[in-house]
Length: 433
Ligand code: ATP
Ligand code: MG
Image (tube, helix red, strand yellow):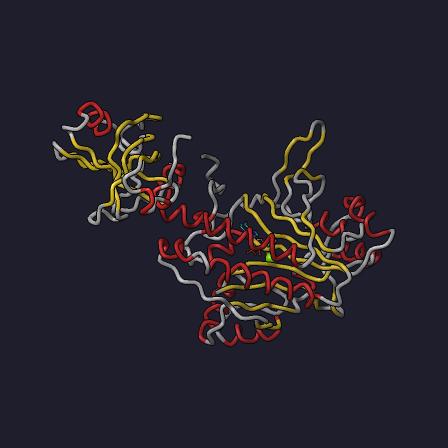
């Protein structure tokens, strides 16, 4: 290998032995007879110390390389209290693996932060920054936690089609594509398939995957390609069984993020684990409270962004970050949502600090009611015949939720823009990189 030790893995037992280190040359300080190179790898940085008189060619070769070039260096590891890591490496030979072009479009360790678009235009360089590495390490950790938590609750991981024939919710916010000689869509959620799986006996499934929404608007909390944790579970008593999984999942992921102490330090963030159960707020009560605060909302409407923010502020005053909104009016929820009486539904949203992070519900499992609800929502059951077939030959009561990973990370780390939480964001104007 071109590396025997990462910077942070070097210990006193390596002192006075030869090590091979490799990475990007972050900074070079050439003082004429002595030079210092800061070499960065995945785990941190280390100092290479070069003496001109020792190996002049090597000194010239290394100090002549532009910033961010990639090298592998064999050298003697010497303890040195004056160096941050407590050691330095004195190079004996170097292999230049890649010479970086100059000038860099984006500095890695610049004091002045580049503007967001410049960062995204040069995302690969941007991702070299310790803050970005910390963020995506936390993303990896919380997804690992979601996987482990759901498996421990006997959920089976599945992967449903992302090229689909009909729109999941009957909405129009989908990307269309040509599927040979017919039109098709990119999935905006796994909704219809995960529900269908409830008729197979698999009972509890989860999926962590990509979804596509052709939403034209450009907001700080919408992406056109985003990832989500979805679950569906059968033989439930009510949507409460689903909410119980969701709140414990969120708590477990939040807790796991809190254990990423090194990464949180880099990001200068703290994480307080929420206690469960989360508060349940009835839609009716929320509307009344919002109206009392001069919101123009009328009963039967979904909360606007502004309403959500206002409610977030009200909750903050009470020291509450997480809260469910329950018993939504039937008319604001998708057709597959189980009605509760004539006007209400068994649909819920989970909000965190004034932003929706998940939506879920108990679903309709009766095929006649399901078709009635489709028609009431202006949809033609004929367009959903493959989905409806799953309900005709034995379908248990079931429910589930969709939970946006980027929304979660944005709230977890109090980030101003959802684009920060995904490697290569897709939005109204951005299709590259
Ligand atoms: P919103 O009203 O906030 O736009 P939604 O109600 O349309 O969201 P759902 O269809 O309920 O979203 O999707 C489930 C979850 O997926 C949301 O709670 C959110 O966490 C996430 N999500 C939905 N749309 C987007 C998007 N465009 N970008 C990022 N995450 C999204
Ligand atoms: Mg929703």
